[in-house]
Length: 98
Image (tube, rainbow, N blue to C red; front, top):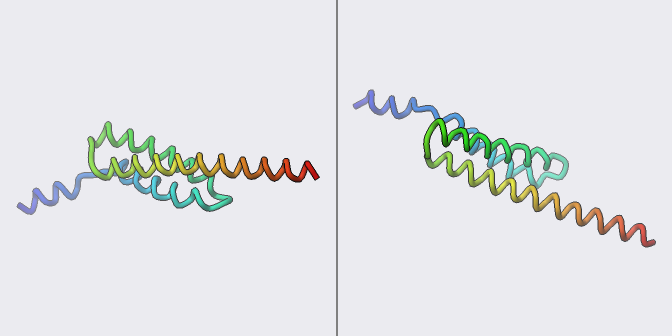
């Protein structure tokens, strides 16, 4: 009985764990002004590690969570970049009109 428990515990899910961590960090870093681009990079890496984990480790909950969080981080990064770009453009146009 104990050997079965240890075999289950020794099952490595490194890529799934990395995709989950990168997804969480991507979401957090998206809202930090200067470091926000790192959130984009981590979100993309999270998606890559999630796809690698799906092939090597099979489907599991941690893999799905990492994929979903990385996808949310990627979408949030794109939205933040577009909004900041629009604000900068509007400000430049406003200053140029003076």
